[in-house]
Image (cartoon, rainbow, N blue to C red; front, side, top):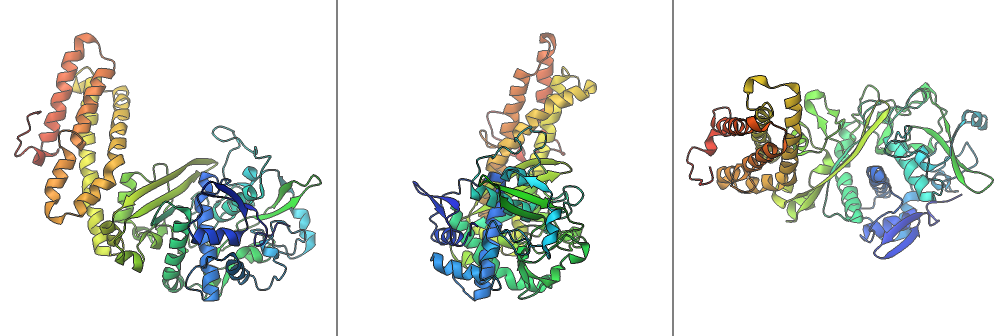
Amino acid sequence: MFNILTEPLIQTRTGQDMRVMSLPEVYAKLMADNVDAFPALRPHQRHAWHAFLVQLGAMAMHRAEVNEPPRDPGQWAALLRGLTPDSPDDAPWHVVVDDLIKPAFMQPPARTVDRKREYKINVATPDQLDMLITAKNHDLKAAVAVRAGIDDWLFALITLQTMQGFSGGGSYGISRMNGGLASRPMLTMTPSSRVGAHVRRDIMAVLEYRPRLLAQFTMTEGGAGLLWILPWDGGAEEALAVDGLEPLYIEVCRRIRLSIDASGNLYGMRAASKATRVAGKELKGRTGDPWVPVNPRWKGLPLTPKIGCFTYRKITDYLTDWELPPLMRPTESENQAPQPMQLVARALVRGQGITAGYHERIIPVRHKAVQSLGKPAEALELGIIARERVTQVGVVQRILRRAIQVFAARGDLGKITTEHRSLAQPWVNKHDEIIDRTFFEALQTEFEAPGEREGIRKAWLMNGRDGVVDHARRLLHAAADTLPCLGVYRYRARANAGELFEGGLRADSGLPFLFSTRNREDQ
């Protein structure tokens, strides 16, 4: 039941219209850039759905030797069926298949029907199937999607099978991340915020990158790509070697089957496994995932995002210390076309027994910076400028932190306590948030003007209104107006904090070059 190649199952918003479409119709609309949103798609599922569409579409096009994504649903249906030539009944594309030894969509088959007894764990709702850990009902309530549609189940199933990590005995994770408690992030470029433009761009980019991926990771041309069509009974001996897989393989990490109860409602059944589906423990996620940065200093291990993974400091780290993922680099056509792009970063941060938040950031990238990301020397130059800026912000924040601590200690530098340090930190965090808002815009302005960089940097640091130092000075004044201090000590506290701040900036350990030829009237 519910053939996603022929039946309208996926809610899709196009302009003011809401339509329910089959998967081929979705592809056709995406390629024509006529999709505004998928209403049932939850924020943390965006990368899973995007990656699925890109990997599946690119594999189908490569297998059929098609160079340009079609805009006709019939052509897409033929391309997708080309990935499952041994299933004329379309079983791998049905959401529900009662025969356990046949595959269902994102649900691997068993080798024998008697394995059905192993599917003991019932899943009543798609959010219960999803990868989010919500057992304590703090931020998100568990198992509340009782009126779910088919696409709610589809998105939950895709997210679980392609993004989940280790969840306890018998519940192993995917191969495309560094360890069972890690996660699978996304860093990529897109020509616009439109869903279809992004999917189309990444399909074309990953096809351009595919030969390199094939050679670098010794994967197999014509290897297994849709792992849900292969029989799997959960045994350790069934683990698939990565070198026998198609470079863009779509994996499944759990033994799941969906069914329909007597009332016509969908529900799921789960079975345990004794090992991961893909034998990737030794690889530690080094599978060539085109959205994931790797660190050459750590033997090419992929990024494991943490809280705050997309701040300006972290992205600067990726520019300087990490090898950017292929889809974060411009394609040949993007190098030639003078148009801006957007950097899209997404990650669901996981931990042991917790979900530590969904993080997403979109950064406008001008054409010169886009081109630089495709040239190692220029990318390094951009990264060095960013690193210098981060270091200088750190100097200002160190001085600001100390000045506020002195004020909180009634102006006595020798009596700073843990309490005073804790009072200062929120103000430093506020300064960091202010800098983060415009960091990349200002960075690109400096990068685009090689002959004027010194002046641009000084203006960014201190221009009397919106410079890094100016924001810090205003926050120091605000802290002195806000933090508790006995009236008898307030004048001394203000004076000593201000003196420490201004003196620290001018000291050799501060930013003395800003004051060497000063003519500012406000200082």
